[in-house]
Length: 436
Ligand code: DGY
Image 1 (spheres, helix red, strand yellow):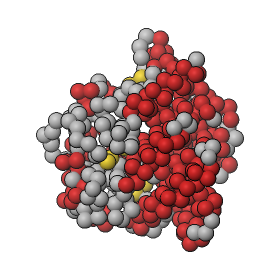
Image 2 (cartoon, rainbow, N blue to C red; image 1 turned 60 degrees about the vertical axis):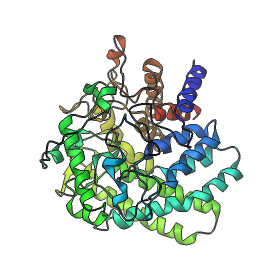
Image 3 (tube, rainbow, N blue to C red; image 1 turned 90 degrees about the vertical axis):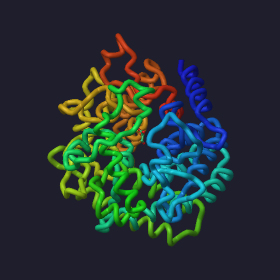
């Protein structure tokens, strides 16, 4: 059974790998290279095809900008199945963009640092893996430097995101109150995603107006971070995004130590680390909710909801043991009902929870993967096991979908797998979970 699933996962991954050396998340819906997808996908490939794992990372890094920025989508090819494409995003407007690789002017969670470490740990040929790390690590360091120097205007050690697509959790209810502060025009455009997937499972037209409006403002200022910090109606310190950065900082430190030398970089990374973790715990931990929350930097107020992102700091060793216990209690009391798979993406006890709609409730395998390792790190082995087994069971029952209904009873009568099918990171991270 497991062998069969492993083979199927490899078929999905190999089928989505492109000639130019990167993977699409899935056919039709996402026809380019996505940044955080690529990290997770490379981890999956590392288990059986190291060459593809390396290419995945190196192709992404080739698209890095002159200031260290790595974009969220790299448009390697033309496609008429996706909106908004390269003609809309216009990365060429930025004087610092990479003119060889058209891309968006926004980023996604910084996963490449820990991806490098995972690849190294999985590799059986350590010399070869270290050579690969050596060749690429400075680009990732430069990317972290970009974040701390351009995305942290108050010098807190917490970086901001300026678009919900930068969070990765695109249409989470977390953003609903920010949308209420905006009144964008009714743009006229032709979406493609809703031709490919049931609109019930995707963001609404009005939500897209907001998404586009933020990009319009950024484009007006040629994607200047300074102007974005000053003017973007969306400016958020996201615990998931910052967790990925902090985890990747630790990975870079560990890898630089393996390589030897690089004392200045290690020292700088440790400085960032100390400051980031301190601010993270003082600013993003909500004692009353017993969870980490987001902070709306534009409107200067906390966004007080519990989502799967709230527990992700376990993955980077951010909470104290005491905090971790509280976090896990919160997770189990709100998300851990026996009739639900772990872990819904948004608080299932909240009225904004929607079990079918993208990031408003469904289970995502990448978040489960982050939680699995985080829970294990803190010794919550039974719950970690449940997260792992639930992930495997969902894929066994429904297939390699993009996201999954958390309600167990649904699977008696319908397929609770939603969004894109043959989705790369679901396959990649399944391989890693099974091999762990
Ligand atoms: C989409 O098009 O929905 C993507 O998630 C944006 O990154």
